Image 1 (cartoon, helix red, strand yellow):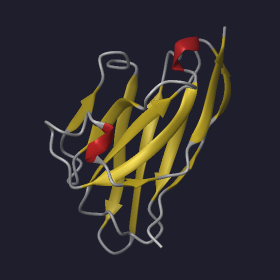
Image 2 (tube, one colour; image 1 turned 90 degrees about the vertical axis):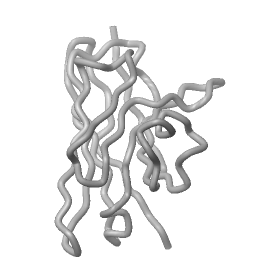
Image 3 (tube, one colour; image 1 turned 60 degrees about the vertical axis):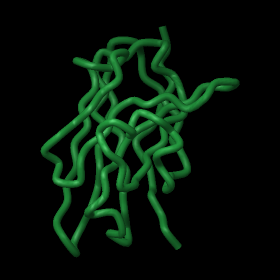
Image 4 (cartoon, helix red, strand yellow; image 1 turned 45 degrees about the horizontal axis):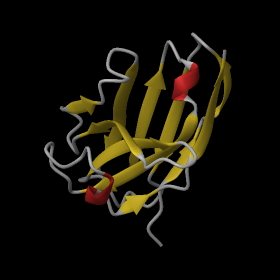
Length: 128
């Protein structure tokens, strides 16, 4: 079964930091782009950031640029984990965060429909 597993969510005060992880236990997505989305009740999933399969290129939404950093630790046939380092958190960052993987392109990765493979989500709550 294709699987992505998020971890690292929790409760943090405004101005604090959290790091989310997205593990690919089967190393299925080592040569796929990976990305982070977030969702609040009643709203569509919003693109947060993405990274190319090489790890050389990263992309961010304007709402998190300069505060969040996407990275990945990929060793072919050994491991593939993506991270989201979130700094200077704000209450409006509160959401369920999902990781995704697919062979998306820089022009399409901002759209939820461009990603076929998703994790189960992890809750991030930022208190004021």
